[in-house]
Each structure stands twice: as structure tokens, then as C-alpha cells.
Image 1 (cartoon, protein in one colour):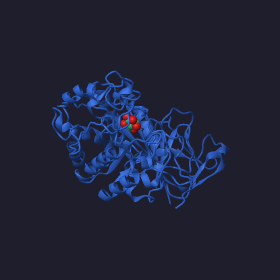
Image 2 (cartoon, protein in one colour):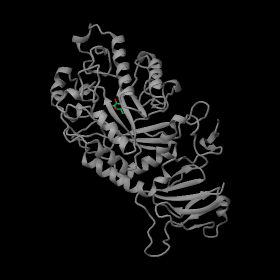
Image 3 (tube, helix red, strand yellow):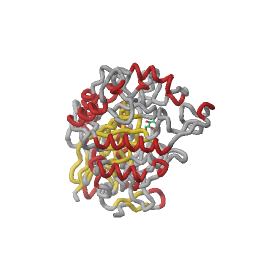
Image 4 (cartoon, protein in one colour):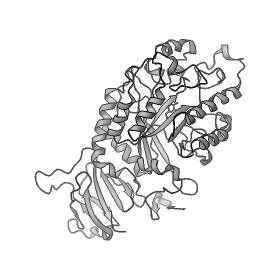
Length: 448
Ligand code: GLC
């Protein structure tokens, strides 16, 4: 059903529902959830220079092997991670079952290159699934369709492989079909051995390594057969910088380290489901020198930004080689959780308030007949809202449930016509403090 009319001038009108939930019923829980935890964990936490370390430093399988032989994250405790995710207000998680380095955190029958064979000697994915599921979080797997360890993956001519341009691999014979069998086989294992899985996050396509090169349709058919309700990202046909979308190959788009300027729409003008994935510093995998942490305020603003454009936020943690999420990440998530504990109703189940443009003072989200005004920035004068004056039932601060001082006049100005005004400067009495740190949310209930 067509819900949006796009007018020239970049104004979006909604008819009449806040966001499109009924297009793909599989996505409904996910669009309500809005906020999830991404976990990049693997061998690369030992060198501690990010998960691309093998590619960046052109490290061979042999040179990487000592790390594999050493991998023993004895503090690994996914219960703690799940508790942290929950306390931050996250509703789902996606964890690396295998990254580009090819090392598996699950007990694959198809390889020896797995955590069961490292000193830790366990199926870490199984423990993750149980811990997160037990705590009521939805569970997803990240699985790299690229593999820098597998013999049959292209090397010399590949733009990213650690052995790219290395003459030793120039004339080697690889068997691509055999790689596909391996990759499809591992996806089958992940879709079979861990009960119901909510999200499969495949990563990634580039150049001619996309779509049918991966035998994508066959793969998707298998996934859908084994896990009929699973939702699937779009990277069988694209990457994080790529907003193209083939519904046959995935359910949602994955902007990486960026937020679209506007809600993403398909050519027919219908909203396309999307999820920004974002690091807390500048690395996905653990990086011991990267101290470029984002503030909790920026994370709250980012989450609201995504939701106000109909998107989700998948926020990353990169545990260290002992299996601990860095203290800085924990601290940020706990702070975000404090804001969420008071204000999450302006996030869960919300989407864009498409009839309203972005205001100077922040952003607006909407859920049915509720508008949520997120007042994020200092402002001159009151918060103003146009076009709803005759429909307002009540105006409340979300974090306290208390009445917000709304009036329909500002200095008796005739320009007041059609506006309501909420004066954020004027406390009702001395001790009353309504400003939340980072984002004060005002809920406006409209009569239908
Ligand atoms: C990219 C990177 C990768 C990271 C991912 C997260 O595709 O290759 O290291 O896992 O994006 O979006």
C-alpha cells in the first residue's frame, strides 16, 4: 500500500499511518525493537588492531596461526553481555559466527578452524545464543561470505585478500564450487543447529563478487526453508555503502557508519527497512589503541535520528582477547540505558513523523496517535509545533509523566495562528526539573 506522497521541495506527507509495518510481517518485531547490539569477536582481538588486520597488514594464514593456537578468552561470559545489552535498552543482538578471517566461533563440522579446537575449546556461538535468548533478546548471526582462510577463495586478484598481488598465488588453481559448497554448508549448519534464529547478517558483496556469484538465490531459498521467520540483510547483493535493494535477496538495508539524510524509499515511494550499523570507537573488532569513543549523548541522538527516519540502530561492541567488553563501551551503554529507561517509549514501536519536517531543536518520532518531540539542542523561545492545535488531547514529559506547559499563544503574536508552544525555559516551580540530559522528550497525544 502506498503511504507516502513525495512532494517537490523534499517534503514528505504521510497517509495516515506513522510507518510502514505491514509490508513485510517478518520485520514487525524488528521495526518495533529499533535498537540492537552488534558483537565483533574473534581471533583478531589478540593482535588488537581491528578485524581487518589480516588484510591491512597482509598477514598469511601461517603468520596468523599462533593467535589461533592461543585463543583462550577465559572471561567469556555472554550472560553479562546480554545483561548489558538489555540494560542499554537493546532488544536484539547480532554476533560474528565467522568473520572474514574465516575462524569460526561455532562448532562447524566442515572445518577444523574453530573455537572448539583452540584452547578455549567451546562452541562460543551456542553459549551466546542460549544467554541472549534466556534474557528475552532476539538472536542474530553475522556470517562472512568472504573467507581469507579458505583454500578455494580467490587471492591474487582479489582487492581485499591478505595475499592479493602475491605472486605465490598467481597461478594457483582454486575450486570456486567447492568454496560455495563450504559456505552454503556452514550457513546450513547455523540455520539448523541453534534453534530459532531471528536475524542472519551476511557480509559482504563487492565488484563481481555479488548475487549469483554466491549462488544467492539458492542460499536464500535454503535459509528461508530452514528458518521461515528469519530476517536477512542485503549484503548478498551489496555492501555497507550500497543502498541498493533486492527484496528477493534480503529484507533490509545496512548503511555502515552513516545515517541516511532522509527516510529510504523504494522507487515506488514506499519506505525501505534499514538499519545503521555503528561502532562505539572507530573499530568493529577490538583495537587496543583506538580511544576515539563516541559520547553517550551522541549515541542517544543517533538512535533518535535513525528512528525519526524509520530506521534501526545496531551498535557495536568489540570484546578483548579475554572476552571482556571494554570498560569504555560498558560505560557508554550504561549511560544510554539510563536515558532509555525513562524515554524508550519514544523509541520502541516508533517511526518517522512523516508529516513534520525536522525542527531546529531536535527530532520528532511518532507511534500511532502519539508524537514525540525530542528536544536535544538549546533553543531560543519555546518549542513550536504547527498544524495539530485542534487535535491535541494532552502534552506530557515522557520521563516523568508530568504535564508540559503548552499554550496556544506566544506574546500575543498573530503569527501564533495554528501553533502550540511549549516553554522549556520556565520551570513550573523552583525545584521542578524537566530537562533530561541530552534529549528531553515531550509526548503529544492526538485525538484521532
Ligand atoms: C564491513 C567490514 C566489516 C564489518 C562490517 C560491519 O563489511 O568488512 O569488518 O564487519 O562491515 O558492517
